[in-house]
Image (cartoon, rainbow, N blue to C red):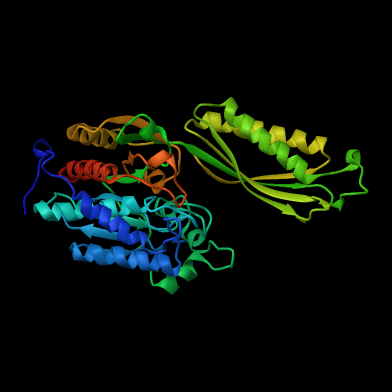
Length: 421
């Protein structure tokens, strides 16, 4: 096999875009939904089918397969010196209940396409290369999101990760055993030379600006909250308006508050109420209890802290005015993530080498790379998605974008995997 130096990297070394697209379309048949999306919730039988197919393809590409205690799957292509820390890529294969064909799985199969392409050219890298399937990135079945990469990075304890339950009371540990992906490899504690994650943008910026590649420099920090407002259930007819303790009225005012906080810290802030449950949910009963969720995001930690303070102060006032009890619990937090400058530079250089229009961009969504960045030099590659739509069955991208992102990933990884120890 041949070695390739950084100076010898040219666009003559590229991925097979049609092969990658065909692999994505074949994966999309597993858990396909009527509107053209997918439903592969983490650790379901459909998730197992998807994992099995990817592992089969990886074995055909002469990868060795290992699975860790959180069910993360590592597909390894040997290098000249396998004692050196690897260059890693990957993403997730699970989806939202009404998810798209590209979210997550593009990063996994893009990594596999890098390996296939290196095989095509007979290139031997100095370091091994690994493509990873991270377990339960979405968090749609088991909360929180990105729990397995979080365990890998030491953010969560293994016991915590394995004990996460779905709505039916089944744990991650139990479901890993059931589908045959409860591995023996310790989760984490490994040295990684560099890591990259390939992903659709999941937003409208790249397409709107006619840019092919997003060079991801940072990821937004996030705070998630669960809020319960408690008032008093009462008959909708005999109860005078001034005497009501309407929990839903209070919740509607909090929704407005959340929107105002997001606008106050625009253009970088995002603030969302995404889930709401009203009790007793009867047409002629004044709601006595409302549960809802809040999602705050911003790339600056001090602004997130200010948004948090404004939220808590505002909810306290709303509760007092409505004679309500308020319970506000922050259930998830991670600080904004600055990605590694050298990895970012590798991505930018690869995009320039191919002549792809590009721009620096901040990730508005959380990704496994955000946790990985706490233990290894890491960055991401974004490509556009049509109309910026994701987490939706109509999520779509063009084969040209898909191929371009994989080419950038190939060259960024090849550059770093050629570095000596």
